[in-house]
Amino acid sequence: MSLSFADAAKARELREYFNRYGRIYVVVDATGDDVIVPDNLKGDPALRLVLSLRMPQQIHIRDDRLDSDFSFSGQVFPCRIPMHTIWAAYQPEGELEQGIIWEDSVPEMIKSMVEAARGMADGESEELAGQAEANNNEAAVSPMTVIDGGAGTDTDDEPRERKASHLRVVK
Image (cartoon, rainbow, N blue to C red; front, side, top):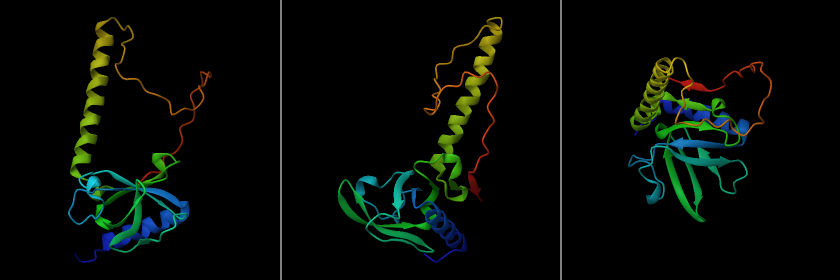
């Protein structure tokens, strides 16, 4: 496979992101034959690998691929991840909005799942709105529970200021 400018640009952006934060997850489409990972991880369209500057082995982010000897359940395995299969990077401890998504590299399976989830959410909200209207504007109960990420509960009635998103979508 020849080197593409898109892969080289992605590699540069991934190197900068990795050097800035020191510990990140990269999300890989491990369904292709060109991805070299342990056999039990092959076929995962959203395989997450942890990269850390504190890892004892070297991590090589080349213009066309990522190479390193990763440890899986205590077993070291030499991995080769083509750059075109990496579709996201984010901080494990951070918020997902602060990560990077390379939209052109997102697997079709993942795109379909996201669209289906959005469709279900849109359909559910329309259905709930219809139920509320049918019940003379009584509160409809949703079968889904939203859990607020563990932060303390606010008793203030004032709306909280929304944080600006830092998620960058690269097209």
